[in-house]
Image 1 (cartoon, rainbow, N blue to C red):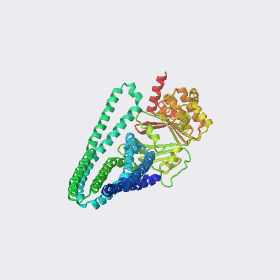
Image 2 (cartoon, rainbow, N blue to C red; image 1 turned 90 degrees about the horizontal axis):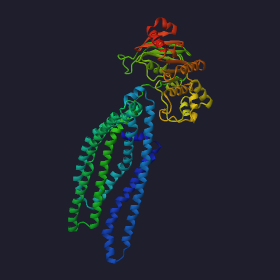
Image 3 (tube, rainbow, N blue to C red; image 1 turned 180 degrees about the vertical axis):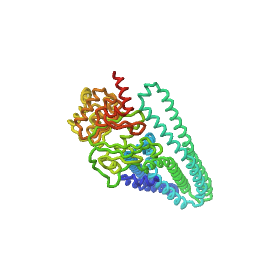
Image 4 (cartoon, one colour; image 1 turned 60 degrees about the vertical axis):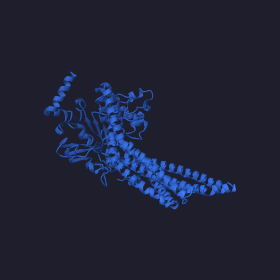
Amino acid sequence: MKFTQIMQNYAGSYKKYLILCPVAMIGEVAMETTIPLMTAKLINEAIPRSQESGEISQVLLFGGLMVLMALASMGFGMLGSYFSSKGAYGFGRNLRQALFEKVQHFSFKNIDHFSTASLVTRLTTDVNQVQSTVMMVVRMAVRSPIMFIMALVLALRLQPSLVVILAVAIPILAVCIVVIMRLAFPRFQIMMKKYDKLNSSVQENLIAIRVVKAFVRSQYEKEKFAASTDDVTATQRAAEKIVLWNGPIMTILMNASIVAVLYLGGMRIVEGSMAYGDLSAFITYITQILMALMMLSFLFIGFVLSRASVARISEVLEEQPDIASPESAETNVEDGSIVFDHVDFSYQGDEGNLVLTDISLRIASGETIGVIGGTGSAKTTLVSLIPRLYDVTRGKLLVGGKDVRAYDIHALRDQVAMVLQKNVLFSGTIRENLRWGDEHATDEEIRAACESAAAHDFIMSFPDGYETDLGQGGVNVSGGQKQRLCIARALLKKPKIMILDDATSAVDTATDARIRQALRTQMPDTTKIIIAQRIASVMEADHILVLDDGKVSDFGTHDELMKRSEIYREVYTSQQKGVA
């Protein structure tokens, strides 16, 4: 996607400001290029007349006109600045919103493709760079060419022979700009990748700050961050020192051109073929022409800076989510029945590196299913397929009698509640977090869900109760409290399928039992899948799935598995010894 296409697509209601800005710039240029003519007339006509007659009315007239033109130019300039700021910031807002909405539709695989840190950079640094370029474009892309043309035409009217000076200066400038652009662009691409790495370091450190402090690794993290910062600084310098040549080159060309004009123009004044006022006006026009070219060069440099950002933004906007709702998608999930029909799954999408292999399983609606297995047996991966966080690589997965790929994603996920071992709470109050489950939940429904999740008592122990501010990520509550709040949040969804992925690992066995009892009595029609390390948490389930290395090792009741499953029996025996 090109820069102009992005501007057109995301200017939205701010497009009028992006159009009005160039109009104001035309007015500013018209005033600026007319003032030198007034200056020439003042020097050539008004001042000599006033010296002869002693009347200064002509001087005052031309002087007054010049003041009015300068004020008008300033007014048009202020309007242009206002319109460009309004339009550019509005464009940036729309682009940032579009990127965020696009990311919301990404699957986990799409997000992994970019990395979280890179997406943050694209939503912030890259958008800011493009936004700044838009502000510069709407001002300079019209102002500079018009300034160049008008000043050139008026300079030709005054003294065509002196314009040849520009025939030397302009090609030199053009060559310099092309060389600078070619050298700078790859350096800016490298710089943005370094920004990704820097953001990744910051994000990782802040998320794992407790681990960093617990292992006394602050110094190591400081050194790692310093190394990333040095890399960014080095790449910035490498890019900027190329771009910085633009200013000195322009200054040298401008000064050399003015010196040439003064020399050649002075000779014509001596010869009598040029007036003093014309020389003054011509110098102003030469300056305006070269300044216009200088602004165009900065505009090109801005394009170079934003080109890398535009490419990175376009990658996100053009990325196609690998999981999407089909046309004429099903919106009604009949019940909580689940069927795995010879399901294989690989995170890479190929069949040669399978995480789950030939999973065949039938779960009736309303059943409680326990899932156990060793670390790396793909328990979480298995349940992640149900709300279609990932798509199966081979086989079929049915929910409510229909293939999950036939459902509208929102409708499917709205009927599946997941509580993970690594729980996430958001900035805000306890009540606001709970209403993620149901934004219209009443206070009575919230309290009932919290009582079922054994959370009400500890919530009321806080001075502000349900209005307690949790802070970012729920830093004000313990791990067990956080788990119970997440369970209550899931209960408020009233889903057809409830998945608890080791969701009670941080609570004691008595609280675990209370939660399971509440799930049985209050959600009889909801299919409940409980992943647990403690067999006590699943032994009362209707059936228990034993996973081993991504395959179904066995499936049955507690008594059946005690008789025929060696893996289950070993886990049970080891845990019973621990209790004894």
